[in-house]
Image (cartoon, rainbow, N blue to C red; front, side, top):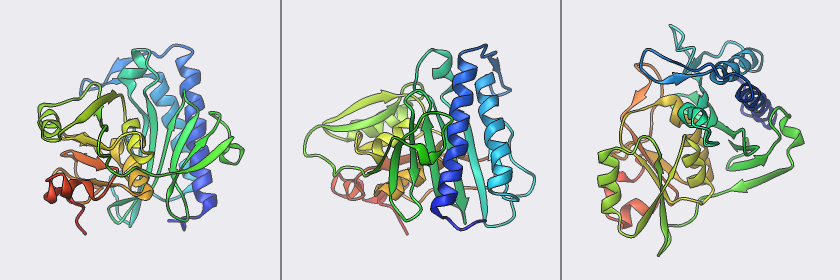
Length: 276
C-alpha cells in the first residue's frame, strides 16, 4: 500500500471523476436496468463506473485487493489494506430521475476507513479526505483531473445548534428503529436525501446527525465515514463503537454519524460516544 500523499489522493480523485463522467454518459443513453439476485437494481451506469474505477485501481494501487458492490470480493483479503467501492450508490434514485446518487471509494487500512472520496456527478462536486488531515470539497467537472478543480475548500461539521438541528434521513430506507431514535431527539427536523450524500451533508455542516439503524453494506458507508471523521465528526455503530471494515458478508448493523462529537453525551446518549 502506497503512502497517503497529495499525489495519491489526486489520482484516486481522478478515477472517481472519470467514473462520474461514465455515469452521466450512460444516463444519457440506455440504462438497461435489471434486478440482481437480491432484488436490487443495477444499470449500465453502475457497470460503466465500476469498469473505470477497477481499471484505474490496477494502475494506482497495484496489488491492493478491491471489494466492489458489483464485482464482489476477492477470495483472499490478506494484508493490511484493501479498497471498498460502490460505483453508483443510489441506483433507485437514478432510475427515478433524481440527481441524488453518488460514487463511493474508500481505502481501508487495519479495519478502519483511512481514505474516502465521494462524488455527486450531477452537481460536479467531490468530497475527500485530505492527505495532510482534514476533509475538503472540490468543484470538479466530471471526467477532469483533480488539479483542474474550480474550487477546493476545507469542510467541517458545525457544533450542535441550540435550535434548528437537522437530521439527515434516508428517502427510501427509513426504518422503525431510526424513527424511534429520532423521536428521542427533541426539536430535530428530519431532511430526506437519497444515497450516501447524507454523510457529506454532516461533514460540511448542513446536517447535524445521520442515523441509519438498519443493516447496510460496508461500501455504502466507508468513504463517508472517512470524510466525516477527517472533517471532525464521528461515525459509530449503534452501540457507540468505531466502525470496522473487512471480511464476512461486508454487512454492518447500522451506524450513526454525528457532526459534533460532543453531542451524544449531552443529548443523553453517553453510550454513543466514539470509543477508542
